Image (tube, rainbow, N blue to C red; front, top):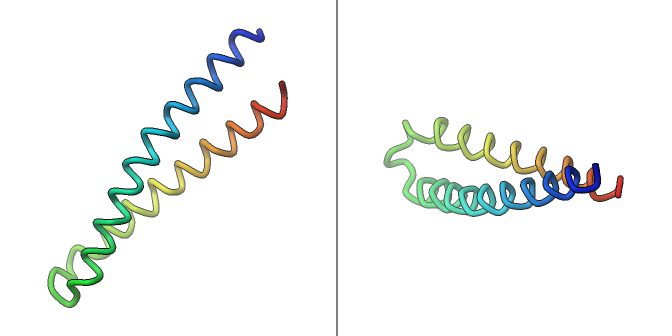
Length: 72
């Protein structure tokens, strides 16, 4: 079971790393869109919703990781 937990921790860490990279890019895309307002304002809700979702997923994974690490 210790090996399974370790694998899960490693998998979560890897997922978090990939998602962090994607989240950073989405944050920059949202920032660029906001700076260009009112141009392309029609895209604002879609980009904001996608950015919110990626950060929500990232928060969820970090909480899972924290639980696994504290259970060791």
